[in-house]
Image (cartoon, rainbow, N blue to C red):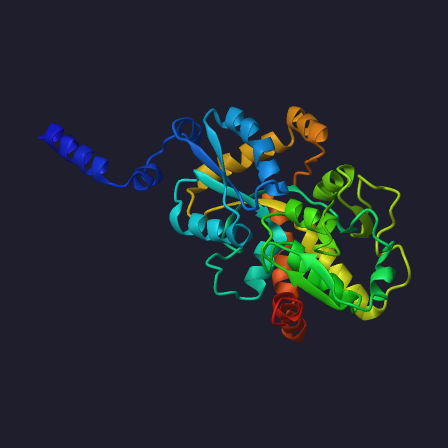
Amino acid sequence: MRRIRQSIFALALASLPPSYCYAQTSLDPAKFFRSHTVRFIAGGGPGGGYVNYARLLAPHLAAALGTTVIVDNQPAAGGLAALNHIVASDTDGLQFIIMNGGGAVLSQLFNLPTVQYDLATVSILATVSSSPWLVLVKPDSPFQSMADLVKVGGVLRWPATGPIDGLSDGASMMCEAYALNCRVVMGYKSSNEGSLAIVRGEMDALYVSDTSANNYIKAGQSRAIAVVSKARTRFFPQMLTVFEGPTLALEQNWWLSARSEVDALGRIILASPKIPADRLGYLQSIVQKVLTDLALLADGDKLERYIEYQDPEATKKRIMDLLTEVVGERKDRLKQVVMKKYLPGG
């Protein structure tokens, strides 16, 4: 009779979804990941920084997990569509995404209908890096500083991939800070395409991270005229930041400081809130091991894609600080500037 009961239990367990079985057993997380393929999603356009970071990290993650890690580029809505899917469907921890932390926070802050996640509950694996962002113009542009942009009589055109992609919301906040006459033009597939649009004369300025800016400048596509950060960029240490230049008006300082804080969220790795706790803890430890490994840091230095690991707790604090501190009239105005004022039809 005992054997019959054991057989019935085994058959019943086999009929359950895999995620239920793993959640209900004491299967070692390391063994679980070694027996499954992991999908590492890059929430950015082809040739952009997120894809490059994902490809840099993937082989190191594969070695640490003892399995295959596939890089999957899903740029739709700056990675928000992919994050929505992961949050809704992944209960195993076999999918995670590297994406723009600022975009994820602003989209939730503005209560956009496309947001189906809550950053208070999403599993955070780490911050990979946090870059200063720069304003670029074409190499032979007459503009030497933000002050020169202020003097422009016509409309300044900024390329972007979507309404909240770093490029677009960053450009809008810069235009508001300096009271510029701007238009953000969406539809470019990546910041690289945006940089080429400046070379062709289609666009006038580009707002982009310093890691991408470094590549475009070395390729002769662009020239930097402003660093929007409290710290200087390692690629162009001689350049003063906007906070080191002429004295800023109070309102101007708020917009630039807010933008700097959004950019400081950096490139973050997020996963589903439904992952079993022991498996999540294991994943977080693996990501920490990889992002602090000297071999990866050396690879990143060679590609000039630097790594600045921040743990899940520190990452979540920075996220929640922004979500809870920007409220009321300030939040409404920020949304109007980012989502309407400088976009087509605004």
